[in-house]
Image (cartoon, rainbow, N blue to C red):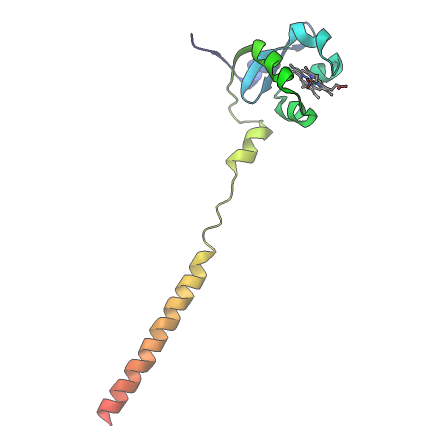
Length: 129
Ligand code: HEM
């Protein structure tokens, strides 16, 4: 059975106390029936309603038990197109600091060529004189 995919727009339509979805780590959860049972209170869940709540969820440092409850509320995958998704940008913009090696490389090559030219010059000068 293929899991249903939710876009950011679809997720954001479930943002009320009587119909509350959140996305955590790329998965969508229907938290509606759990709001009243949440030990952290209903307010925090309503604040995150219809959004990617990964950061808030992890900031609290939820227990294994909390993660088990979460798995029972799973309803599908979160397919954010990345448009306004800040959590994905962090991963996408990893810098690659490779070019720094190049200048040193070509610099030492030039030194090598200059040294060779000097040696060759000396040899030619010796031979000719
Ligand atoms: C949506 C799925 C969530 C589930 C299933 C869940 C479940 C739980 C559970 C079982 C606890 C008890 C402590 C523990 O076992 O870690 C807890 C505590 C707590 N949760 Fe959540 N939670 C969810 C989302 C959130 C979100 C989005 C926030 C946002 C800030 C939040 C804030 C808190 C806080 C502040 C506590 C601590 C309450 C206290 O010890 O006084 N939770 N949660």
